[in-house]
Length: 395
Image (cartoon, rainbow, N blue to C red; front, top):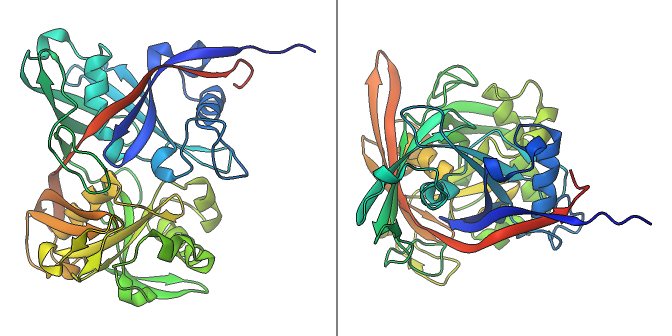
């Protein structure tokens, strides 16, 4: 019997925000995986350990959650006004599927640092001490992200005292600017693809709900917690241990995707798991976060819980945070109403692991809302670097 040996590929395992992923330089991938297609998808599936009918990803780098089943490919940008091109692949855990339809805002925090360390940013642009500004082209959605990466003694600074709820240890702060975050390429050609700040979303077999459907950061469907029997203070176990609830959320998500014009029929939602996200909002209340931390109603503007890849997220997806900040800045959305209404340039919301602040600059232009940028701080840290190995016939 012929045994195919494993091959090894340079890779780095990095935490970015409240997510973890395997990072590659495009030039380090096997040649047939340097272009989009079946070979690349098969490689990334094998690296992460999917599809896994056991749902554990034991035979791969994945961590059996949407937050830890992620891959990133970076290349020196061909655009003169950008440093690096960033492509994100969300790997399904139990099916043979890599979703390329959206960005990961959390891992965006690690892109600048990896690009600097990986030689993808011109050395002349890296200070000996200070902040290196890295202009990132987010290839999945065609948007610009600016990362402000701290540099000490000519190298990326990863340690620091910045604390991020959902991450156990402090690290160096990385500020991210998501420029023109509204995605006008899909749906109705607008930040609000239905043309409305709030719609009545009819979901056969489930009900009709008030919904704000927005393309900003990532396509997101917001609904009111009380309309679906929740308070907005729920932690993961309250949702993820309830099969009926997960089915309900997925059904609402599918019909939201259809209403947003992201899919042609509801059956297509199963092949578009990463987007749109679905989230529910509520007015501030006291609750205890998953870490045991007390979150007071007075400390937040609203509560938000969001699902990713069919499960309630343990904290908040970075791109969903952009959607929250954007929607909060626009009076009349469900997010704005939950936060008390009115105009604002920043919002602090409570999520299962604690709180997060995100800012957004919105203005009304010719009767349509425009958001010039959203800003938030995250952190990132290299966990392991070297090579990842996969069987030579895996792709």
